[in-house]
Image (cartoon, rainbow, N blue to C red):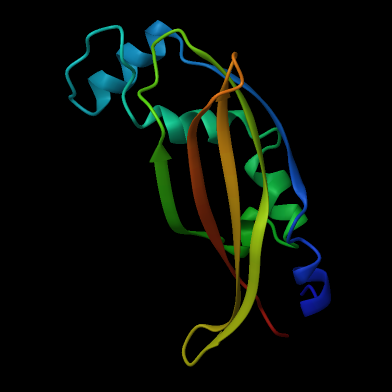
Length: 145
Protein backbone atom coordinates (compact mmCIF):
# COMPACT_ATOMS: atom_id res chain seq x y z
CA UNK A 1 0.00 0.00 0.00
CA UNK A 2 1.23 3.49 -0.80
CA UNK A 3 2.20 5.65 2.14
CA UNK A 4 0.17 8.79 2.73
CA UNK A 5 3.19 10.84 1.61
CA UNK A 6 3.38 8.89 -1.66
CA UNK A 7 -0.36 9.38 -2.11
CA UNK A 8 -0.10 13.14 -1.57
CA UNK A 9 2.81 13.33 -4.06
CA UNK A 10 0.33 12.45 -6.83
CA UNK A 11 -1.48 15.80 -6.42
CA UNK A 12 -0.30 18.26 -9.05
CA UNK A 13 1.21 15.56 -11.27
CA UNK A 14 0.24 16.26 -14.89
CA UNK A 15 -1.32 13.62 -17.10
CA UNK A 16 0.47 13.16 -20.44
CA UNK A 17 -2.54 14.36 -22.44
CA UNK A 18 -3.04 13.96 -26.13
CA UNK A 19 -5.59 14.61 -28.85
CA UNK A 20 -9.06 13.49 -29.83
CA UNK A 21 -11.25 14.05 -32.88
CA UNK A 22 -15.01 13.46 -32.83
CA UNK A 23 -15.28 11.25 -35.90
CA UNK A 24 -18.66 11.32 -37.68
CA UNK A 25 -19.08 7.53 -37.57
CA UNK A 26 -18.37 7.47 -33.80
CA UNK A 27 -20.91 10.27 -33.33
CA UNK A 28 -23.43 8.14 -35.21
CA UNK A 29 -22.61 5.07 -33.09
CA UNK A 30 -22.80 6.89 -29.76
CA UNK A 31 -26.12 8.52 -30.61
CA UNK A 32 -27.49 5.17 -31.75
CA UNK A 33 -26.44 3.49 -28.49
CA UNK A 34 -28.01 6.17 -26.27
CA UNK A 35 -31.02 6.52 -28.60
CA UNK A 36 -30.44 10.25 -29.09
CA UNK A 37 -31.33 12.33 -32.10
CA UNK A 38 -28.41 13.10 -34.33
CA UNK A 39 -28.01 16.07 -36.62
CA UNK A 40 -24.43 15.37 -37.76
CA UNK A 41 -23.34 18.85 -36.65
CA UNK A 42 -23.51 19.05 -32.86
CA UNK A 43 -21.94 16.09 -31.06
CA UNK A 44 -23.61 14.43 -28.10
CA UNK A 45 -22.44 15.95 -24.78
CA UNK A 46 -21.09 12.54 -23.73
CA UNK A 47 -18.20 13.23 -26.10
CA UNK A 48 -16.68 15.50 -23.46
CA UNK A 49 -16.11 12.38 -21.33
CA UNK A 50 -15.21 10.12 -24.26
CA UNK A 51 -12.64 12.62 -25.53
CA UNK A 52 -10.84 13.05 -22.21
CA UNK A 53 -10.96 9.31 -21.42
CA UNK A 54 -9.40 8.48 -24.80
CA UNK A 55 -7.06 11.48 -25.00
CA UNK A 56 -5.65 11.56 -21.47
CA UNK A 57 -2.37 10.09 -22.71
CA UNK A 58 -2.28 6.89 -20.71
CA UNK A 59 -4.32 3.74 -20.27
CA UNK A 60 -6.51 3.06 -17.25
CA UNK A 61 -3.94 0.49 -16.12
CA UNK A 62 -1.19 3.13 -16.30
CA UNK A 63 -3.33 5.60 -14.35
CA UNK A 64 -4.01 2.92 -11.71
CA UNK A 65 -0.26 2.19 -11.47
CA UNK A 66 0.48 5.85 -10.69
CA UNK A 67 -1.99 5.47 -7.83
CA UNK A 68 -0.29 2.31 -6.58
CA UNK A 69 -2.96 -0.10 -7.79
CA UNK A 70 -3.97 -2.51 -10.52
CA UNK A 71 -7.34 -3.41 -12.00
CA UNK A 72 -7.23 -6.59 -9.88
CA UNK A 73 -7.33 -4.42 -6.74
CA UNK A 74 -10.91 -3.44 -7.62
CA UNK A 75 -10.75 0.32 -8.26
CA UNK A 76 -14.18 1.90 -8.58
CA UNK A 77 -15.40 4.96 -10.41
CA UNK A 78 -16.15 7.65 -7.83
CA UNK A 79 -17.52 11.02 -8.85
CA UNK A 80 -17.71 12.65 -12.25
CA UNK A 81 -18.56 16.17 -13.30
CA UNK A 82 -18.55 17.60 -16.82
CA UNK A 83 -18.74 21.28 -17.65
CA UNK A 84 -19.39 22.10 -21.29
CA UNK A 85 -18.23 25.61 -22.12
CA UNK A 86 -19.88 25.37 -25.53
CA UNK A 87 -21.37 22.67 -27.77
CA UNK A 88 -18.88 20.24 -29.30
CA UNK A 89 -19.01 19.73 -33.05
CA UNK A 90 -18.83 16.54 -35.09
CA UNK A 91 -15.42 16.39 -36.79
CA UNK A 92 -13.86 18.77 -34.27
CA UNK A 93 -10.30 18.15 -33.08
CA UNK A 94 -9.22 18.75 -29.46
CA UNK A 95 -6.13 18.76 -27.31
CA UNK A 96 -6.58 17.00 -23.98
CA UNK A 97 -4.63 18.08 -20.89
CA UNK A 98 -4.98 17.62 -17.18
CA UNK A 99 -3.57 16.72 -13.82
CA UNK A 100 -4.24 14.92 -10.57
CA UNK A 101 -5.97 17.40 -8.25
CA UNK A 102 -6.71 15.46 -5.07
CA UNK A 103 -5.72 12.34 -3.13
CA UNK A 104 -7.21 11.41 0.20
CA UNK A 105 -6.92 8.34 2.42
CA UNK A 106 -10.07 7.34 4.28
CA UNK A 107 -11.12 4.61 6.67
CA UNK A 108 -14.54 3.02 6.52
CA UNK A 109 -16.10 0.86 9.21
CA UNK A 110 -16.93 -1.92 6.78
CA UNK A 111 -14.85 -0.92 3.74
CA UNK A 112 -11.55 -0.60 5.58
CA UNK A 113 -8.84 1.67 4.20
CA UNK A 114 -9.37 3.24 0.78
CA UNK A 115 -7.97 6.15 -1.22
CA UNK A 116 -9.91 8.57 -3.38
CA UNK A 117 -7.84 10.14 -6.17
CA UNK A 118 -9.27 12.94 -8.32
CA UNK A 119 -8.13 14.30 -11.64
CA UNK A 120 -9.27 17.15 -13.88
CA UNK A 121 -9.03 17.07 -17.67
CA UNK A 122 -9.71 19.79 -20.24
CA UNK A 123 -10.61 19.87 -23.92
CA UNK A 124 -9.12 22.76 -25.88
CA UNK A 125 -10.01 23.41 -29.50
CA UNK A 126 -7.56 24.15 -32.31
CA UNK A 127 -7.90 27.89 -31.66
CA UNK A 128 -6.86 27.48 -28.02
CA UNK A 129 -10.36 27.95 -26.55
CA UNK A 130 -11.52 25.81 -23.66
CA UNK A 131 -14.44 23.65 -24.82
CA UNK A 132 -15.04 21.39 -21.80
CA UNK A 133 -13.61 20.41 -18.43
CA UNK A 134 -14.18 17.23 -16.47
CA UNK A 135 -13.46 16.07 -12.96
CA UNK A 136 -13.37 12.38 -12.09
CA UNK A 137 -12.36 10.42 -9.03
CA UNK A 138 -11.38 6.81 -8.59
CA UNK A 139 -11.80 4.91 -5.31
CA UNK A 140 -8.94 2.51 -4.58
CA UNK A 141 -9.57 -0.14 -1.91
CA UNK A 142 -6.37 -0.72 0.06
CA UNK A 143 -5.80 -4.15 1.45
CA UNK A 144 -4.01 -4.32 4.75
CA UNK A 145 -2.32 -7.69 5.17
